[in-house]
Length: 572
Image (cartoon, rainbow, N blue to C red; front, top):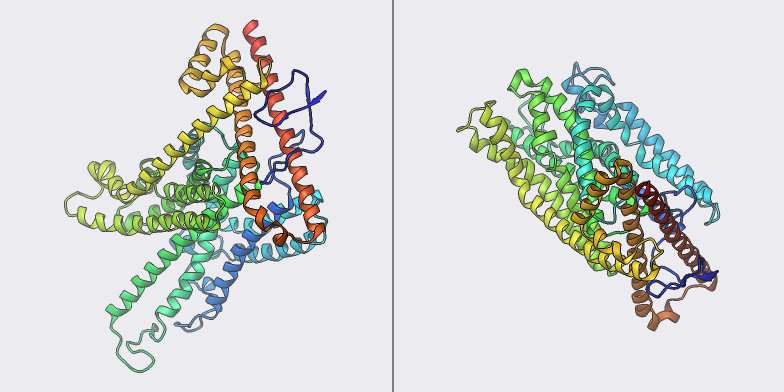
């Protein structure tokens, strides 16, 4: 038995064994065990994930404080505006009326506060545990679930009372999620990671937007109407006459500021979701495609919940304005399924994915900021410009007719989104081209290193790098040897590409570590901390490199088993 050499050198014919002192890697490695766990467990990842959650909770508590200290413009206003109700508003939990669609369920509000308390208590336990204790990992994810998962209560109250609408939106959303998954071409994200991104958007991101914006609306309303008597008098506190036109203008300004706040919170929540998923899940490649896919999946989840409440809302108002729930379903779940929140989430994720590829902090901040600004601006423009276009067209196209339903309304809704959708498609094409080039290099290097008996052979390289040849091989195998052999071949090809994706990641990590070491070498002595901290870091790096090496061997072993299965099915 001999040691496996460094990537890129010829491989001996004997079986490899783990190296005694593997080369360090600059990125947190993946947890590799017999069960194939998907979550990372290193201390750095845990600290970063908790930091992100603490920032979200800190902003929420700030929103609560601002709402409690706002100017009161109505008599008997409660301490928090979310507890105020219109006269005759239905009781809490009844979600079959207009008023209750916009009411904050008190159970959800107190549930969020309870989650914050539980999350803080769990963090107090975590800090007392050793850094390498696996129980700390479990408690970390539990703390994250308590701090952020409680916001899902706002979404669940809506979805639980509209289960038929939920079922109606599942097929189209599932199809869109499948297309997003297929858009990766190479270096596929684990399916649980993609489903978690969808769930984040549908439950937590939507709940965060609802919780934050309902508080912000009361706060903004208080400051906008400060000094204006809304109890029926036409004078302000100084005895001056109040023009109702001015009052209506204030109402529109309040809505405009609230819309900007909602768009900002939604995109920041999407960014938090993408960052947490990249931190928590083990995956092969982190680039612009990774961020774009995760952001699009989160946006699709948000669109799922938003569609349910929009369909319910317009069904209630159909007797007043003629709009129907069916029309909303057509617009949100068909005509613009890949627009709106999907596009804006993809922009946020693409900025994060690009930032992950650079080591300079200034560039990272600039890329993430650019993605957020584009997404926030697009979300606001989508609401404002589409409403303006609708006003221009309504005089020329009949409302509710065939032309309006199939052409005019979808075009008005999608027109402001076209520039942002174009940017997303260009980023996706550029990212896929970069992936294909990296895949060609990784596949060729793996075939040259492994030889005839490896996971990838020289004869298989052209098929792996050409989707058309891969498809032709599957069709030919199906025709000659049956569907079982074709499915086995497809699993084998995916396993080979997984091996190539792992190799690409390790080569990138090694290159980044080398570049980082070269920059730090002139100031190494000045920037060294205490000796024990250095030794701890080196120990963690060795452990991470060991786990990464084990993962590669596990992927290669799986590919070899699938090769055997294909040979058995084809031979029979």
